[in-house]
Amino acid sequence: MLPPKRRYGKHGTCRIPNVVATVYVVEDDGAVRDSLRVLLESEGLTIVAFASAEAFLSETQPDGAGCLLLDWHLPGMSGHELLEVLSRGKMEIAVVLMSGDPDPAMRRAAERTVRRCW
Image 1 (cartoon, rainbow, N blue to C red):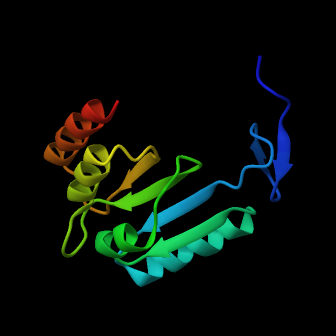
Image 2 (image 1 turned 30 degrees about the vertical axis):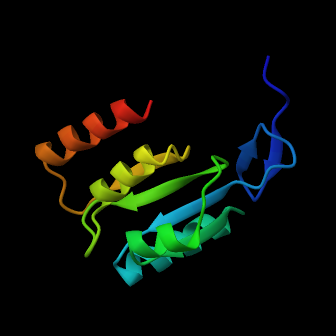
């Protein structure tokens, strides 16, 4: 049985008491990154945003309490390469992939990586 829902922010719910879930955003487009931050913070969520995969890796150690919104097409280390690093490091974090230009090859690569993670 799940514990009762607890309210946070304006509309969200959380089933884990006393846990601050962080949404990490890795997006190279500053306007998209800022828009996501404003939207998610307006819902009462804690947001930490990065312009690159390298910055995310050097500045954070996700602990599973939260999720990662990850752009697939990044300069330098790509979103796919970051997924590979996360899977090798056994970092447990939910990942939502984003792309302004998705293609079938991207989907297949992401599915292969995710299957190895779990």
